[in-house]
Length: 306
Picture 1: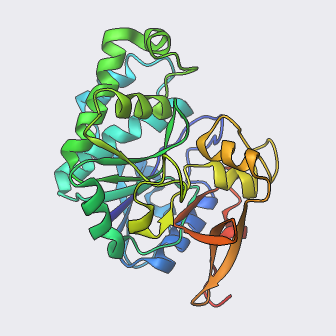
Picture 2: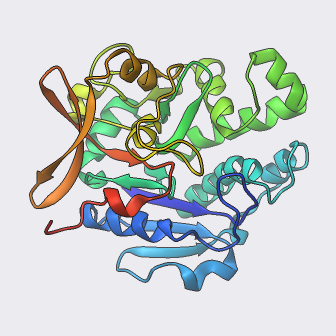
């Protein structure tokens, strides 16, 4: 199974650079520690020489995968094309075209502030069993899903979702969408969650983010959970904001951590590699990824041999 990273140069709020951020190197190193499956890195053509040269890592010029569909969205969106909220959403159009043209599905996509702690190829049968040809997202709360780690069974599944993105802008506009669905902002996270709840119902699955409760489906099969962002914020804090221990009680995971301060994220040795586990009620649950919002990925890497 293929894995895909994306970096588009943009202006704030969380990153303001045309070049790949320093932490992207740690993201790639961590992925290669657990995986031999190809990793494609889509970025601006000028950035291709800046992508770490490693076996199985393939830099790709994102300009080669522009589409009219992407322009239809970008031309109607409220933010400039090079603004963070624009590129965080339009990346899915590039991703769709790249997967389609190169026949790369099934595939996973994760963000460049994410650390992966499992072998994606070995888990491919589980993804296929649970989600088939559809999309799998990491739920954050009732209004948002994140792309900290995602699965696409087919390019058609991704195309179905991005068509929803365009239709929402054409039919409602930014503020109309916000009013209709009662969300604070139209961005990739609110669009994905509303898609999952509406047109995407039957086409979308949720990755297990807890080992119990409503958002644990798939935990038994994976033997692990996925981090939509809350665990990463809890252990590492946020960009330029709060430090370790950050909890958003309105989020699925945040509500659990807030109600149970005795629950923790701990690191354990796994065949010489340091990996995160969710500790609760004297149980340890493996975490397949950590979404490090603070961008300080280096301190949470497995570092082979340690």
